[in-house]
Length: 302
Image (spheres, rainbow, N blue to C red):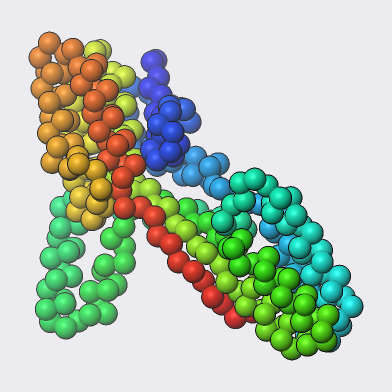
């Protein structure tokens, strides 16, 4: 039985645009099964493409944390040694001609999948608006929270612009026997991080997988290819209903219209190769410009 390669990995969706099949499905599977494979592939690739953590940054953090513990015990000698080690771990990075602004120290992947149709989204939004109008804010909030379908890739980083200087300042205070001030500076340095979350909308992942699947079988199984493209339209409607917006000049209406053009061609002469390429390009370009990155600075007390 012929296999359809579903190349819906994160590098294709948001980064390089290249195709790299993770998993395959047989040609007669349902839209639901294609969507499942698409999401599983995207989850797998999201984990594989998490930003590489900088070992030197992790080692430096460990040394700095141990310096802080030494300061709490008024052990100036150990604190000095640990602070020197913390700076030493960063020497390679600091000596680089292209010093990064942020040093990744943690990376987390979370998946939130909305199971339902675009009509389900619309009905829930109507219910939420009714509750808000009745001032039942908390009930509305509970219904609103599940209204997302995305992979969140969060990278927590040390700001290189301030962290090394803070370590040096803490060391200076230790040398002048001002251990309380050194502890204060080091505590701040170890509790200030920059968090960046990249968001991959799953409905667009599914739409991409369904278009690729339809392209693979459009010549030999028109009926199934049309079902896949119907599923792609529904995924686009879900993405739109959930509010995933893009800076692209392309709109959801344009994407849906292009899918329908491909469907019309499949029903007719079926010379849709270039139409498929255009459709995939439009979806990719749209995804790349989705407002999909959230940044924040976390300040937490140790």
